[in-house]
Image (cartoon, rainbow, N blue to C red; front, side, top):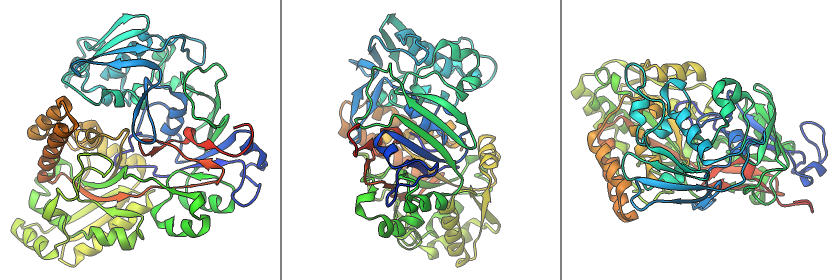
Length: 531
């Protein structure tokens, strides 16, 4: 899953009807429910929607969707609803759909189903949250004109070639398509969804292992296993998952410690030290690869107000190592790259001097720029981690006479200002990948729908295209690194720190992920004869 840009519900909790130290639970059920396959998932933030990425409800959406492909814990691609995904040139891909699949209402899932769903999502006038994912499919610009109405309603790059086969043509060679097909934007919808997508989002008809049986956005959502489902599902998967809304991460953590909640998807950094003591090694699992990174983003429409010298100085007043080691007690790592160590193109320090703590050099840059104002540092008011980081940056700035004012803003308001290009300063933004590829980190910056920075960089775009067209991983990595260096030089997005994800869980549960992105429905129950 991609993680939301500026506003993120960073914690999702899976609560199970048994305890770590007792048999109590949130709803009073007994520990036997875990062994019979009943889980309660406590989800941070209101479940605004189910379908599409970049929202707290996406964890629910993953349980409802069988993608054409699937990514395992190690980041390897497997066929799922597709029997094969092949290409001789990495431009035109032939996809053979597994026969006999159906939606939860009995509607057959055919090649035409996938093509119709992709076309519907890609048409800009439908305002689908997943629209951005189709930007590199041939014909996308015609469906998403900058002005006026679209001249056509279907992608030229999609063609049904048989009941169970279709072709998908990209606008240029792209090595990542098999990964992309495993993500939420490429989930199918039945024809009935096209009539009222808003209503469909409240109760989607699903092709995946679970079906949504209840939704109260501010309280809970319930999904249950489909008896007629023919696809892959993890061994030991729950029969029923109730996603219950939590509005406070500390409360969720306390429920884990008390034994009322069994899995905390991402333990807040400030609680990791406590978690290690309270839960122990058997119930606290670190994700071995970095999959979450926090950046400082600068909208380019503010370039005159905050010129490059000011942005560079801002970056150089930040003691990234101190924030990671002292503020977050080792639960994060200083970032000097746009990419994490989970991708092969990663370099430890492509950022160089501008990501180094050097207050004296920062002061000289500010003096040269003549900047005298205050810089508001924006962040989501629900994120305590962002609040601590913003305060630390503000305190460092004071030492050289720079005024940086932390400004927490409500999630909805910050999101609206971001989307409407109405921000008045830099923001703290968290990014997480859907799959382990450099494109998720470098190419994503070039898609305006992701960060809303109005940023363009022809050199980086050219290198991205070359990376996608590369004949070998080594060749691709060279171009990803060149693109990264070009983006870093513009100082529109500055690496801050990687968040080390820790999963707190019941000893009877084994968490699983898609290439490092923990997915609730994949949680394996290891105790009990039924699983």
